[in-house]
Length: 167
Image 1 (cartoon, rainbow, N blue to C red):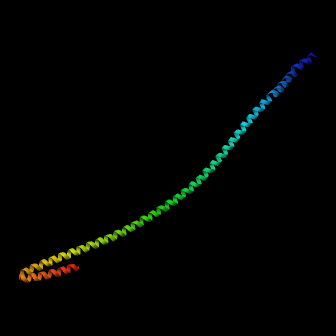
Image 2 (tube, rainbow, N blue to C red):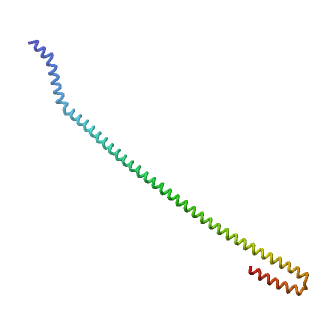
């Protein structure tokens, strides 16, 4: 029987001790292990929720940026069209102003030229009249008596004044 006890003590007892130890360990560490597992699961779920929220936020931001990009492209196109239209209008206005200025300058040049021609004609008439009067005076002084000279000079001066006033 002693052999039987040795077998019992040598083989079965260590397994029995291990089973008792395991049973006690499970009994005492079950609640803390469950709590630790629950805490770990809660942390994992929290991290998963945060990751999902971050992903959703990133997707929303991406969509917002895509919409903004599309609106910026449309706005840029509208600005290009408006700039082109404005430039065309400005070019047309500049051409119109240049044509008006050219027409005004031609009109002004014609008016100034006409005034200069009229002034030159008047000056020429005056010089012709003075020359003719001087010539007549000199001839009359040489050829006629003083009394006849005075009559003729007066008459011719009156005629020249009349001609000068008409021109």
